[in-house]
Length: 388
Ligand SMILES: Cc1cc2nc3c(=O)[nH]c(=O)nc-3n(C[C@H](O)[C@H](O)[C@H](O)COP(=O)(O)O)c2cc1C
Ligand SMILES: C=C(O[C@@H]1CC(C(=O)O)=C[C@@H](OP(=O)(O)O)[C@H]1O)C(=O)O
Image (tube, rainbow, N blue to C red; front, side, top):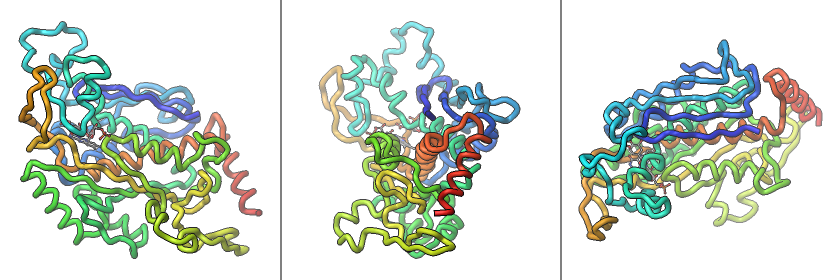
């Protein structure tokens, strides 16, 4: 079974993750992973932390002479900001009286601060926000990049783009995926609609000027998947459920849709389901993909299409009302730095978690301890499907 665990505080020494269950013989290169790490750092609206970090992965275990060994793979990304935090985040020093002024007792509405403080019986909100922070999404993207590499060996391609920012929707419905891909500017908002992008940027700029933040929606597409990843035979093996849970587990994601999603509830059955056709060449096929490539918790061979809604960032430069945990007095918080919007970054994280779920289902279906073995199993299943 493919699984991973991650560790690492936002301003600690490094982020790490262990990926277990990947077959032996997959080529894994740091430079391939670094491409996705760089993409996650881009996008209009990010704060000053992204000027400090240049995320680069180090492979600590599980890879020899560029190939996975089949044992656990450890990945690490150092936090450059650690240099500025080594004392404040030290694991070896006692608490200093002189550090009293760095203790945070002012919880932000919408962040993990207050609930985490109470739940973990803390004295400093920093002890909560350090791991609640989306900083650890960097190591998740590294894990996702390895999973993407695995899937690419079977021709599976995963990409994402931004469809909405602060209520402004991109018009991409008449564009092919290739056109969409050609129109994605990773430095800006990753939306295929260039005229909407201008208005979206203005929306973020104005929100930032007003001390506010904006959210948005992104779509992740996975192409060239085999029929039958995931299963309806047990609730926790459904691919639709696992994709939704993984996307929802990204910080600030508050809604997930598959295919037509919430729209299906408004339509008639005849407008929702994808009719089935057959030809000698194509075998069973559909003319539409409203289901987003998933029926009965399984991939049906069409493109997998999922969307996720990101709420506006909770740290506001014009802060919302809150109460100091120590004094119980209302306060006006001051903010050192924060993102005004991070939807393009979230969409890269979305690709990563989708890649992980697909790779997990893929390995479960086709088994195998080595890439050769899993490829044999995959080819034999493809032959079976071709001859139906
Ligand atoms: C890529 C990315 C960047 C984020 N940047 C910030 C930020 O700069 N400031 C902030 O308060 N929240 C930021 N967030 C959101 C918080 O991490 C998130 O709202 C918080 O952990 C509470 O979790 P919840 O929103 O899922 O309930 C970011 C989220 C993502 C995915
Ligand atoms: C560090 C990242 O995002 C961070 C996510 C985040 C949060 O609260 O989620 C808060 C900010 O952290 P800081 O206070 O250090 O600026 C963001 O910069 C990153 O994406 O790599």
